[in-house]
Length: 356
Image (cartoon, rainbow, N blue to C red; front, side, top):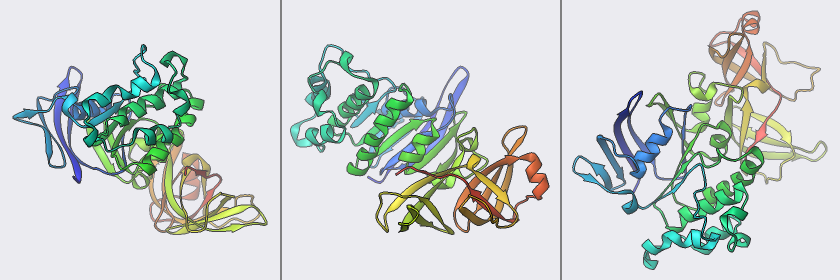
């Protein structure tokens, strides 16, 4: 079982979805795009909650839909987590989680219920009714219920969208724990770049019902031509390795293809992998390496692309010698510096966010 192969042509008034894609059955694949791009529709077709008139769907060797066959949702070995945690209000947490177990023979259960409860930190909630749970707790319970059926595929449709920022930050670490501990592949729908940056191993970008790009998050987030580069949260993703610690100034040095940066001290051992996010608004460009500045991460770069971001701003793609980042600067600065593809410059990185 190596891939999920999905081909759908499906439409209704005002919208049509036309996709043909193979997705890896490992890690987290994020489906990203603006509202109305077709993310949730694609997920519902994969789940069998909608049926495309023209469609083919196979999970490895198992065909779930073709011209002669349509496996109903209840017969597909999958879990589904919606935006709203649709828990049964008359059942406590334990009975909500156990609800789906009745259709899974004990010999077919590949996931430990006790392990799920521990990973999601909900042991103390088992006797509570849903109306006594916070939004973050309800969503963790909904995830546990979806995992309890030992799915071969977990579908998550914007599971954090209904939560405020505090509850969202509460749930994200648990999703990271699941990613690290379980081998169940996940399709994760989101239009929040920060979620994609933290969780995704593979990225599928949709726009107007079509797939416009797919690949690694680091590769796609640095492309100026994609929806990922729109808005104030545009930025690049960098996979780096801890190279050393500076005890005098409480800094950590990380290395990545083409460069090295110093960050506030991290609780990570030398050689450990870290994932960093550099927002385009935190990168400026100079033609010569600067001195007499408080910015300590100044790296040689080559301009790869220039694109319009807003009526007053441009988005510059920069290559650090194997790692791509973005810089958001004014059109005036582009002209003043004479920026164009191929020009050697220096990237001044004012801030870095450590994701994990």
